[in-house]
Image 1 (spheres, rainbow, N blue to C red):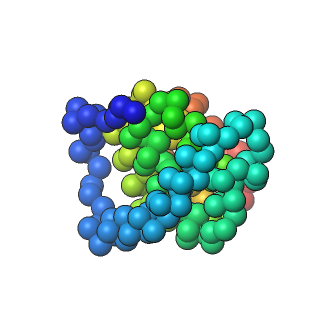
Image 2 (cartoon, rainbow, N blue to C red):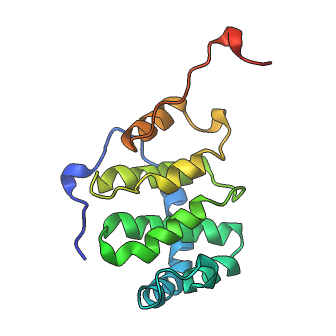
Image 3 (cartoon, rainbow, N blue to C red):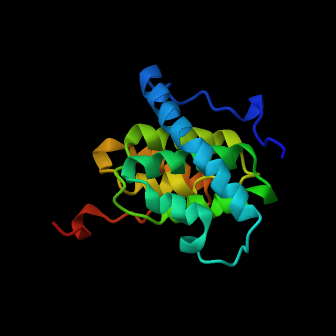
Length: 171
C-alpha cells in the first residue's frame, strides 16, 4: 500500500482543532481499530458480492452503538484516505455504508476533522468526501459554516446547492 498523502497536500488554511478534542477522537478510533483491521482483512479474503450485513465489517458495524459507529467511520475514513488502492475496497464499502446511516449524532468537530483528512488525501482518493459530506448533512446550518461545506462539495465534484431566492422560500 502506498500513501497518497504528502506534505504538499496538507491544508493549513483551516483553524486547528482543540488538542483535547483530537485526543478524544484518536482514543475512540484506537478502541475500534483492532476489530476494524480484522474485519477488513476477513472481508478482503471473502466474496466481494456478499451483502454488507453478512460481512465481517457488517457484523462489526451492527455490534456498535452510535458513538462506536462514528469512531469506526472516522477510523475507516482515515485509513482509506491514507492508503487508497485496491486493498481498501472493503474499507471503502464500510465508509459508504456508514455514510448511508442517518441519525448517528455527528459533531461539527468530527466533520471538520474528516474534511481535513479528505483534503490531505488529494484527488487520488475519489471517495474522500463521502463520509464527511454525509455526516455534515446531519448538522444544523448554524453548526457548520455554509462556505466550508460549499468548498467541500465543490472539491468532491458535487454541483453547488440550489440557491432559492428569499421571496420564493416557504416560511
